[in-house]
Image 1 (tube, rainbow over the protein chains, first blue to last red):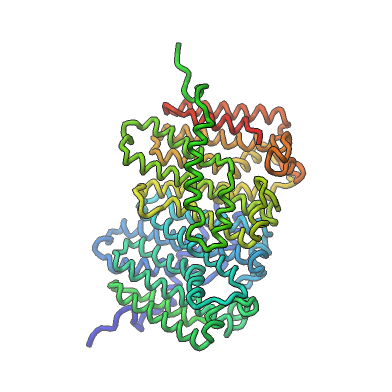
Image 2: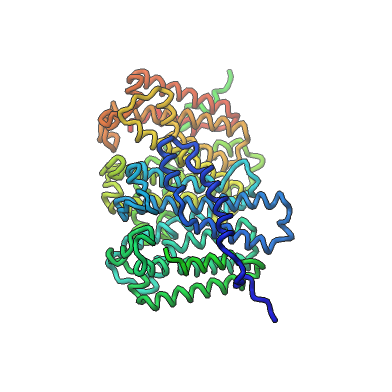
Amino acid sequence: MSAVPMSQSPVFDLAPWSQNHLARVEQALSQWVGHGAPAGLGDAMRYAVLDGGKRLRPLLVLAAYEAVCSGNSGAQSGVQATLVLDDAAIRAACAVELIHAYSLVHDDMPCMDNDVLRRGKPTVHVQFGEAPALLAGDALQAFAFELLTPDDSLIPASVQATLCRLLARAAGSAGMAGGQAIDLASVGVALTEDQLRQMHRLKTGALLQGSVLMGAVCGHAAATAYQALSDYGAAMGLAFQVVDDILDVVADSATLGKTAGKDAAADKPTYVSLLGLERAQAYAQELLVEAHAALVGSGLPDTRALAALADMVVRRSY
Amino acid sequence: MSAVPMSQSPVFDLAPWSQNHLARVEQALSQWVGHGAPAGLGDAMRYAVLDGGKRLRPLLVLAAYEAVCSGNSGAQSGVQATLVLDDAAIRAACAVELIHAYSLVHDDMPCMDNDVLRRGKPTVHVQFGEAPALLAGDALQAFAFELLTPDDSLIPASVQATLCRLLARAAGSAGMAGGQAIDLASVGVALTEDQLRQMHRLKTGALLQGSVLMGAVCGHAAATAYQALSDYGAAMGLAFQVVDDILDVVADSATLGKTAGKDAAADKPTYVSLLGLERAQAYAQELLVEAHAALVGSGLPDTRALAALADMVVRRSY
């Protein structure tokens, strides 16, 4: 009887893994964000970040890092090496969350989505004013790159530079910001499936995939594993958005923690408007299978956390 | 008769030096900014950047880089080494300008200064709308870090990481964004001279000083020279803001290219409101002397461009 590939193993329990890793992320964010900032700005930065989001992106960084380390037991086994890599991975995990948090602060502003509630709390501009919200978002983006480049650390410069490169690309005009710009320009416009996919790959996919790749870099992934994790990240990232489109239609606002039905109300193209609900659901499942297949092909011995995170992305209800 | 220190030499002509170096910066910015971005976003990014600003920050990067190289004739004389360093310096020069440009785009927005004209043209949000302006600013910040981390380049990873570190600090909550937050919170508030200095050191000083330090890193400055250039950058950066405060009072809007008298109208604390016009002018001169003294103490053989830029900062009329 052949062994079940570990990425498909039914015995991995995501909940305790997440709880344990989230605790490290929350502690690091709380320790770092807003300190050294003028009082008002620091408060707004901390309010924007320390609000109990799902932290999917940090978890992807850490899961990818650990998956790569599971294949590195020879080269990276020294305690010192592990601590250095752990520091890099935690910094990368926090940095992607800072980029995500800043994008929410700016997205919620009156000139963008004009949202007053986020995760059940007043949005940053409602709580602190528009100008402080704008500045807090700007400062959070800069701080993400500051976190990746500590000058008193043992993290190799090549890792620091690569992490900055991946994050800048994922966040910028060929990534998240670019996708938001396409989104803005697409209200009331009929997109083809290719155009919709491109918009989502940039808007949410780039940072989700970037999180996986940053984790892989922290673990010094070999080329084959890196490429497989890149494929995993692309499929999982797109699945995330397809499911978002589905939830906007099928969930209620209380469950979502944000306004349901907004996309349809805003006449925004979505996978549901383009494919219909059933085909959108089938597409999410296809992408999940793709993500799992990439993990199996990675050659990494333990990708169970990544597999479970992809499952969670597709099966979530909010 | 002893030689006049070169940083004080009267024979250096800044105009042709600036013209030559500006041409390289403009060409690089035009080549890089907005390409690969979705059309609307790329247009807004280019509009924000390619508008003929003074480019003081890029010139500071290049002048510091060349000053350091003037002391490096041994170690860095290979043509290959020079080309690599040149690439780093040009990228750093463009990166600081992108940060400056993004800060102007966001500053001009209705929730901040609500300015409709910048350098005689409609501001970005007037030309493209508020949401595209917000996104263009965000994308410009990310692109600054992307420019510093090219993956197909010979720029050493240690230089890339250090440049990202310096830029992130200069732009973030302990730099430019932090200074803007203090500025926002200071309207109608009586500041002490120490508090005013701290605000300006962050708001404009950090990025001006950071530009000098980034140029120094591109040239692999030794510790003594680096510290001297840091002192130069601090004095010159503060002088810039003192002169800004003076010009807000003594110049007219046409000369400034922006609204004169705005600080007083907004009841913002300035060096003029705190010290009076004459003492503010004397303080700018003191800072200029400090900047020159730091250059003389740097041990670098040719700091004439840096000296001339400090002169220009203090003697400018807009």
